[in-house]
Structure formats: structure tokens, C-alpha cells
Length: 280
Image (tube, rainbow, N blue to C red; front, side):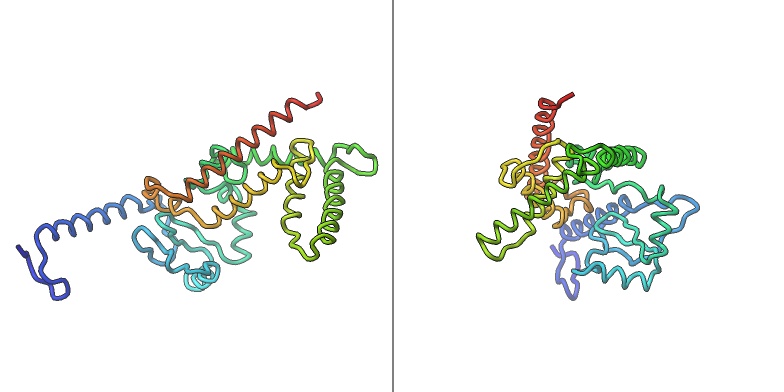
């Protein structure tokens, strides 16, 4: 039995009205629960009004850098947008960015707590760590200290000033020979892949004290996983910004978790081999 008649929708039953009312209430509650509470004494940053659930994604379009630049002219050099259900602060202009990174570095240090980051090295990755700022800085300091060691440790050959220079120089010479041989065999070619493999080889030499052949299965697998990782991360993960999507099955997320698991297993294997052959 119709409850009422609307010009555009026609007859509406009691059950349809109840469904509509419940839907509106649920959306309203979600908006209230996900709204970021502003601490006392602070004001909300200016910015475009977000839509429920998706935020300002539609306004950013296919060229977000241009859209954000246009927004900065309207809302100022510091404003807020919402990507999905997560608030994001946008800084625009050299002076503002310098102020944030140099003079207020403690407030802007660290990494965002994204859902997908928890699957990268169990959330303890140096680049994607979701730990507190102090923990992240301690790891970063340790990594920089290790890199400085390679700039002070003498290489195996006296012609090089340090171990790092030796690794890079030898790999560079091999890369040149490799490019020459490929050029003779194939003529024109894309050097990108060969350069990426050489860079990966330098990193492996620093971390594990071992250089791999460019055709080595482990090294090629490592480079392939890095390429896959970049493509998946570049495509984005909506669950990072719309939390309730995490309960839904996702092929992209499944691939992402699988790549990180394979990468961790490969790293553990290489580390164990390094321990077995390490000369104390």
C-alpha cells in the first residue's frame, strides 16, 4: 500500500520509506563517527567541503597536482582535503614546505598509518613504518650509520678510497661491458632494466657482501618483485582511505600481501646465507 506519492518518484510504500530513513540515519552516523575531532584551542583548516565516504576524490581528478595547486589559490598555502574518510593536510609553496620540514620537523616527521603499510615487513619497514616518530628516527639513524661505515671502511683494492666506491665502480664497469655486448647483439635496446639490476646489485653488495650475476635467478626475482610492488602501490589501495572496504575481498590487496611475503622470504634466505658464509 502506498504511503504517499512524490512527483518524481511516484508511489512509495511504508517499507521503502523505512529503508530510506534507515539508510539516511546510517550514513549520518558514519559521518559523525568518522569526523575528525578538533582539539580545544585549535581551528579547522580551510578547504573544500568533502562528500560522504569518498571525500574530495572527485575534485582532485586525473591531475591531482594541478587540482591541489588551484585549491591553494582559493584556500591558502595550508589547507585540508579529505581522501576517502581520511583528512589530509596539503602544503603549497616553498616557504611553507621549508617551515614544515626544517623548522617544525618533529611535528611533520614519521609516516602515515596506512592499512597496507602493516603488511610491509610487518609494519616495521624503514620507508613505510607506521611506528611512532621516535622509533622511525632511531631506525633511520641506524641505517645512515651503516651507510657511513661503507664510506670509511677500506676496500679490498687500494685504488679505491672506500668499500662503497669499490662496489659502485666495479658494478659500473660491468654495466658498461654489459651494455656494449647487448648493443652488438641486438642493436637498439632499453637500458632501464640493466641499470635497475646494477643498482640492485650494488645494494646486495653493501648488505650481503656479495655480487650477483645479472642473470642470477634470485637477483632477477628481487628486481621483478620490486617492479610489481611499484605498480601495485602506484595503483592505490582504497582500503587505506575507506576503512570498511578492508572486509571486502580485493585481488589487488591479495597480490600486495603475496609480494611482501615472497620478498620477506627471499630476504630471510639471503640473510641466512650471509650468516653461514660470514667471516668473523
